[in-house]
Amino acid sequence: MWIERLDASHALAYRELMLEAYDRHPQAFTSSVRERAVMPLSWWEGRLTSKLDVVLGAFEAGTLAGIVGLAFEPREKARHKATLFGMYVSADFRQHGLGFELVQAALVEARNHCALKLIQLTVTAGNAAAFNLYQRCGFIQYGLEPLAVRVGEEYFDKIHMWREISAHQRGGETVDSSSTG
Image (cartoon, rainbow, N blue to C red):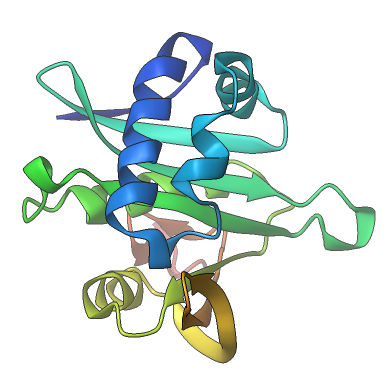
């Protein structure tokens, strides 16, 4: 398994995996399979080449098995924030720690942006597996958005979470900058 930043050459595989995600878990995403399926391949390429987004992909035996993105805030007063988005691992590759590895890779990417102070995300209330994953990765719940997503006639709440990014954190551990050595 390896994780790398996706580029325009991955657009078709990225589109396929995201459409799978929207279809299998419509309550987890704000976008729907119907609205994204009609987007031209150039739209997907643009998502992967945007200066405001980074999309990482996990590959198993050459197959794109999971994805996660970071959207950086362009406005001057909010450039210290990024949003983790589009987290998905295909059902065939779950239960092997791939989700954890993707979030960790996103955190490493975030640390490469020196102005970045925090990452925020939303997770559908009731999605215990995703919520627990984000907690294990250091995210803290700070709010609940009621009726955030409507799928058919059913509404789903979204839990808002955040995590501070520190230049002194490496590999998931906090380094004590006061120690000598």
